[in-house]
Image 1 (cartoon, rainbow, N blue to C red):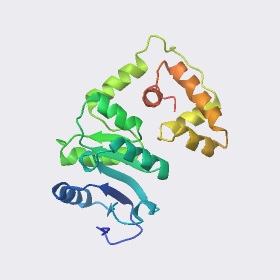
Image 2: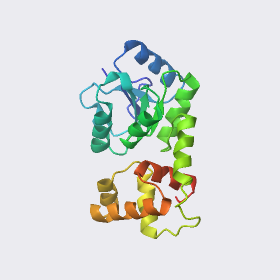
Image 3: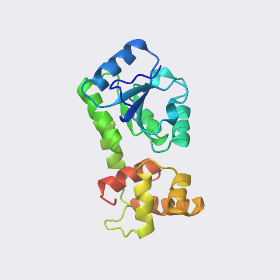
Image 4: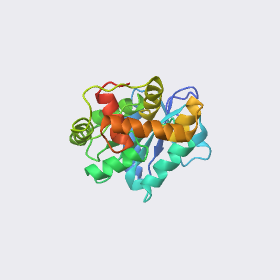
Amino acid sequence: MAEAEQGSGTLPRIGLVVTDEVRLAGLRAVLSDGAAVELVQLSDPGALEMASLQLVVIDAAATSHLLELLASFRRLRPLIRLLVLGGDGEPDFVERVIAAGARGVLSDAATEAELLMAVEVVKDGSVWAPRKILSRLLDSATGSPFAPAEVHLTKREVEVLRLLVKGLRNREIAEALAVEPAAVKAHVGRLMRKAGVTNRLRLGVHALAEKWV
């Protein structure tokens, strides 16, 4: 049953994909403590269609198909922010999860304060991940000897980048800008060459680090 912690249907909602009762109880206690939000179990029929659902917290242990689940969320509700709890914490895992659509990854050992901070960061559209892994992404995105010191971006490239760093896919960007998906793909390819990176995740990190958007 959906749980309205504050008793108001107009409150911003945080969805939960959690099957472990202990973890679920802990998340309810932390996220609803003094926060004007409504916590919603996404096992409820129709919960995903709620208009004010801003963020979904997914326990990696709740599914054996995490990447597919993330892709499904991105397809059905592309503007919802996704935060993953748990997993093995290895850099490759974190990169795969973020590339699949999550905006944040938090370890099982995270404190309550880190959880609350991660929720706020991801809700704002930024990326949350272990500091060492973010540093690695930044180093790989900005440290390429092939990346030019000064880069000229066209107006359209800036528009594409702004949507890309929000987590939108090429098709969604194309719809937002009223252009063909092939045109967006071409822009993203040129942007990656300008940044000296080889994937969308590192392009987004590079764009934020270099204040391109």
